Length: 355
Image 1: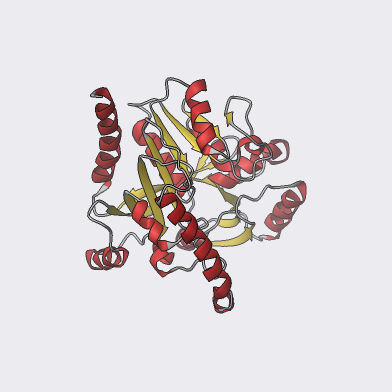
Image 2: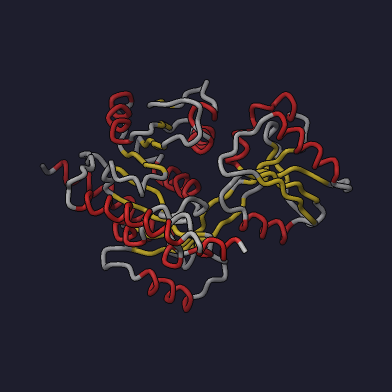
């Protein structure tokens, strides 16, 4: 029903799409100026409004690079309660920098995690405050053209490929499909693990990449759940009854995972990047009490967890567990992806050394 209703919104999408197309043309013709930096910058993003796996891909890059380079991530800090440029420290909260940057900060305390709405302004500030930085990863910046990154990684969800989607509000695209041509790498994410070569070739043909573009396929793998505060691990089994609490753009893969690994689950769904309040906490506890099972827990995502930490006094003894996720490359192509990323950085540095 919802999808049928969206077709009535197509005239608005055509107008919005025309505006975006014109904006891109102005950037392409250098009438609108993009800032470029003599510095290796990797951009991670998508064309859709969310749910393609940008956050775990940024984490994948951090894990790949942090032992060999001094890296920093720069995010907008969506839905934070502050404005301007900031670098996370030991006193930082999710309300100050946003849930995803806070997630990065907690996982990688030795990595510089920065936020700033105007990335063209934030990058010089970041390099001034952290001059040892060797690589910057721009989180969710592909559709923002104020900064021209040296290397662009664009993700698209297998279940909703950008080639089959529409511009907002009829669809989920916030940029025109042709913008995909600016990507160096296109990642088809959230695939079924059993994706075969035949379907892979069909999707690549549909995407129709240029000779300079590489297409990769990933699936989601879930790690071991851990208690939000005690960090005690727990394995989800068919004996568990679960209350799933999440405010993410696309919970479908998570729901499918629980269908396979838990006895049952109830869902309390909130909007993406939802800031939890005391009333939400009350609802969670009431919903949990309604589950008539002994072996029951509450499960949430890493992104939601950083927004629930402020309730430690109320939840420290509550069975609230966090389920981590990662990208896993299909068809044995992880090393090829890693080589492309590191070759960009090393090639960029070598070029500048020879100048």
